Image (cartoon, rainbow, N blue to C red; front, side, top):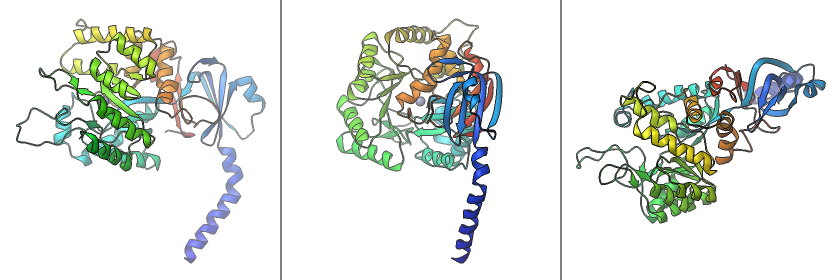
Length: 425
Ligand SMILES: [Zn+2]
């Protein structure tokens, strides 16, 4: 008891005597060539950071007028300052399928092994400039994303702020691993659930364990000929959405068939993941209902290369031609586009690959930057914390050399990553 009291006294005096210098230390002025605030580019702007928040953004000449003499100045010539990027679709518990096929990751890798990998994946994601990430399912690693997120939040390991889905929900029989002897029951890459009581219970259980959102598979490759086909009924999805929503959680859906997408949109999901075979009618429905699309271009591209396609040497396979065509239609449609690559299919830390591909498929670099910052923040309901350079928001910041609004590849020339006001070393 007594020791505890003394400790408290020491802490208190440290706080009082040290507070002046501590406060002075925590004001940082970042002086790049330009600022992308999440929506537009501003030349000769600077950003003032106080503790873990953005204090001011504006013309350098204006900010510099009232700079405190203790403010730390970081000169960032030829650089662009942006909000810390937001990865919209990652799986920190997966690693590239050309290293280990998905089935083997789920069935042959222990949870401790997968967690050890996830820890390094989180660090790589952060160091690539992605200060926030939406993890859309542990793919068989149970609720291990809950502990991973906690360890990041408690600064035990470096990583992005996480929005987690935990196990994700699938209709019984629809998901994978599959194709094994029918008498063998194998663990699945997501949680099976069906019908009224079961769905309510499993949604609530995932929320209780720590899910920030509910992820469902609205279709999967279980059609009569192995093609993708819808899974849950509209009523089932409506029930999932209502149960999640009453606890303040959004529902998002993996969907690539028009019918799977239609059911999910009709039932009230907030983002559609992949959307490969969407039609003009579906885009219209999404626009009307303000549902965002996360096209995950890089995942499909990576899988085709794993199967032997020599990109850049051989002509585009049918699937790539189609995805390019669909993406052009979406760009014209007015559907809001998230940036999310389905990372894990390809390497963590290589998240920018999706941004490069969005440009390759016809999107303007500035629009890609918006998707990866303000649009993702709006879509994931975190716009009051991150996604823009705006006074009062958290100081999650990326500085790169060059101008990614002109050349998207500049997003890889990382000069500085700041999360919560702290520079990531
Ligand atoms: Zn995914």
